[in-house]
Image (tube, rainbow, N blue to C red; front, top):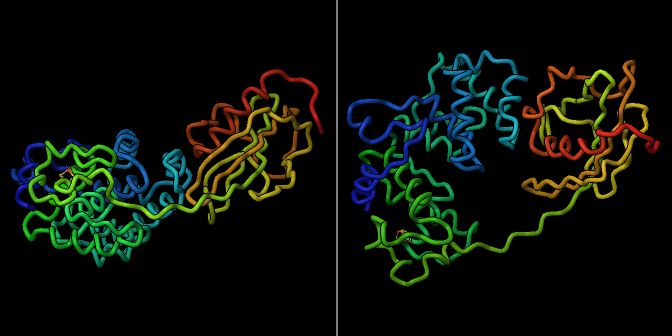
Length: 352
Ligand code: SF4
């Protein structure tokens, strides 16, 4: 199976900005562990399409681990904005600094040593070790789970079947070219063995695939029903000073959206209490913002106020218009800004 998969990869590997393709590998080029690591962290919980441009921008700005380690926290957090899961950005910096401080600027070469760095879990450690250093580590992400579940017609639902699928994936991992094998499995899952309509006719593993033979490929992997996400509510306050400065607050380092800039607001709870950050005539913007986090859904009411030039904030600080970039806000705060735009347009009487 591995030989058929590698032959397919040699012909069909996706061209990705962090990847050294199979032809270049044969010509002796080695992947840059920094780029492999960065791409794996960026790709967690999101897609190649969402990451490609961001990765290029990030690596233009910080082309190696030393430059990233020396970057200001706020710059990295702003560059990460919109990718979500902001703890990853904080760990990214911590990891880059650990590599520079304790490993002489070189990433360790084994999955076991990589897993001791901040923000590198077992999956990411295996992926970096396999792709960058050709360790025969087994890399199991959602794509790989799907391919393996189908190849072996595993009917037990996820997440309970995870360990069994990982063991089956390990049996497929070859001693030769384990990095290309890992990337081939990811590519197969992303382009051929897709979630809803697997293209079994173009699959290099069609012959041994049991789910295809049984006609149940599109039904696998099965999943246990997900628990409904609870709903939390909150209130966000968008204050605009006469000179165009915007009232923003950096969120605490720990917790959701930790370290990111955002609009001051209430707690996120079942029944949030008003918590205006400055004395003003706050008006309802007339639009709610909804955002889905991993463990809950958030519904934010948006209040807006125009503030005098000498306004004083009890929380947060005013950011001059030339320094305010909505694109450096996390997605939920960008939605708040868009919702507030209507409320801020015509100054007029408001509610206290
Ligand atoms: Fe997936 Fe079909 Fe290939 Fe089986 S034959 S691995 S179901 S694409």
